[in-house]
Amino acid sequence: MHQHHLRSVSLLSIMVAFVLLLVFYRATQEAWRTIPQITDMEKAAEAELHHSNERVGEDIKFYNPESSFKPGTPEPPGYNYTRALIVPCLVEDDIDWIDRELPDIQAFIYVADNASAPLHPPKNKGHEGMTYLTYIIDHYNSLPDINVFMHAHRWAWHNADLLNNDAAQMVRRLSSARVIREGYMNMRCQWDPGCPDHIYPLQRTDDWTKKEQQEIGRRWAELFPLDPIPAVLGAPCCAQFALSRERIRAVPLRRYVFYRDWLLRTPLTDYFSGRVFEYVWQYIFTGNAVACPAQNACYCDGFGVCFGGEAEYATWFELRNTLDTHQHALREWHRKERDVERAKQDGRLDEAALLEIPELGMDDWLLQQIEALRRELQTRKAAAIERGKDPEARKLDLGGEGVKMKDCGDCETHD
Ligand SMILES: *[C@@H]1O[C@H](CO)[C@@H](O)[C@H](O)[C@H]1NC(C)=O
Ligand SMILES: *[C@@H]1O[C@H](CO)[C@@H](O)[C@H](O)[C@H]1NC(C)=O
Image (cartoon, rainbow, N blue to C red; front, side, top):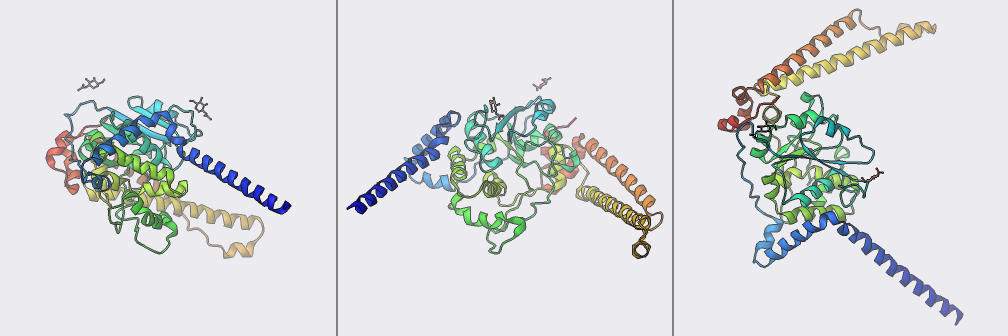
């Protein structure tokens, strides 16, 4: 009797605990919906969904819509485009450079880990993806002409090498005309890493350099239910890009809501869910699994850095590789010299005799080469920036990409 009583008590407490857990789970699942800044657009998206449900066959288009984007026609040179800069950051990030360096662009800075910040994503998950989608959802009906999506760090290895890896210069020099024409422009022109091919979602074996590869294959159908898994995905790395209003709006609002819902709900970690989006942005906006424009055309048309052709562009990077090699060799030369000196000072003469003695005079030769290469690179870069100011000269770099000559009449000149 006593035992039976105990058992029913524990059964009851298990049930109570279960109900509490369920309530708690529902509360956490729903919490983000109550954040006021997104509910209006959520409602609009739902209304749009119900509206289209009334029409037979429309629903399928939601999952696999034909992009309605047509290449845009830029305004005449000198036109003042409205531009927004969208930046996800953390409380600890230094973002003062944005106000200081880019006073002319409207900045939307989302603090991912501060729910009291005026702008913040519904959840700190999915890296920049959550913020980018939140901006698009919240501003779908009030977008400026140009929307630039960038990381919070001003200097990064994956920023443009030809603009000193400086995000501020990239945004300042970005050609609105190219963004209007193309609709989607990756802010990285250099192919490495990411192009011409990068992720093979169908590959079964693990690749530790691309841990997200298999995950993208596994999750593809959740994001793009009716689209076959592409054999390969490719785009210059690191999820910084510019979009025209028209390109954003060529995709229905509820599809962005759907993508963000996926991010909010996926059991994948922050790292993996962020990585999945990093390699599908070009697919979301262009419908192409591979988006790798010619590097010289991207730099010239996109940022006004024009080398006059693919070969001339490639030469600059070859020279810089040689510079890197020489700098490495010089460091090695000094290391060997130090090793020999130390061994001698310590009286380890037998050991010193075995060490490689750096070639006499090689350090001076390397220094001269390094200095000459630095000057050469600087001169060539300055000439490329000068060439970028001339609309006629810019045509040379655009040929390889198949951009029509007449388009170049729209090309902006940069300061
Ligand atoms: C664009 O803005 C600049 C600076 O405010 C102004 O001087 C110029 O007249 C404007 N151009 C046009 C076409 O409105
Ligand atoms: C979060 O944002 C609020 C509102 O801007 C601010 O007062 C607060 O200091 C921020 N918290 C942190 C930790 O930065």
